[in-house]
Length: 107
Image (cartoon, rainbow, N blue to C red; front, side, top):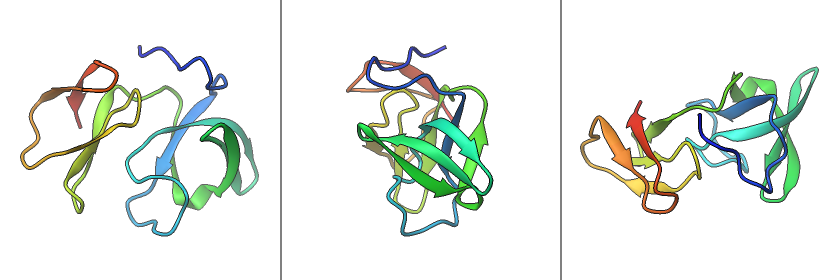
């Protein structure tokens, strides 16, 4: 399990944008802690504040992912721990992040 950042509130779930969503303040491929859920929306921890995002825009999971997310149209991977983006041509099975030094499988 990957430790949470000190400045991140304890997440009950994690969320990222669905593949077909455009024009949203969340970065594609990055996982964000969910502070709370409400009918039709999730309150996401985003850059030292919160943002409410429609549930229809999100993929939700109960535990923090431990795999890199591939964003194929833009050819980069997103670290599951710190959300660092890394340009990638051919994804390997595992990658080490240059920012947080975590090593994770690639989805």
